[in-house]
Image (cartoon, rainbow, N blue to C red; front, side):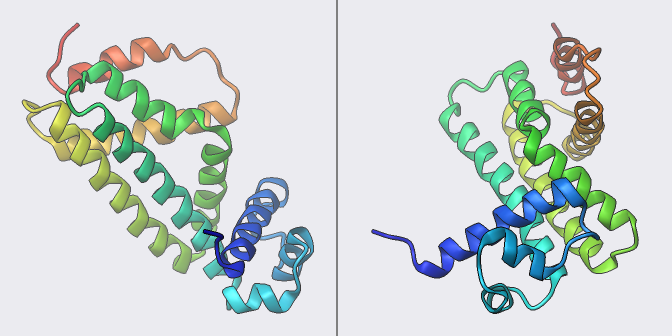
Length: 190
């Protein structure tokens, strides 16, 4: 069954925004730029999004929702074989190595840090959802972890730091050592 025409327009809008954010940053494009890049009329953009903030938030939302969905799918596929080391490798890969997503993440955080309070509040809400998703996996994989919430917070901080290093193209980080070390946070040795 074909998708509705409006959903294809929205996909084109999101793709255009992601490209514009990556090339110009959040502050340096307009909804008219989005229309041009997506090859759509400005009216189509305004039909879907009343403001640029709504559009940028939708990009954040899709970014984090996609990450959560991939992560949950992985947990379900490996439910009977959840090894701590593999779990951490997947969490770090999905959070860091999917470069376009990681780069977008940093651009959006930068916008939040730049004073966009509406976007910051919405981003925090989405971040909390991501943390809850991580917590769900941690509880499945690290049954004996003393403080699963602190573990989830720590993983999020590590992922954010690794994203920055990935964008800087710092290849000196030994991810195998990091995974081994992070495994010990969950009470798993070796």
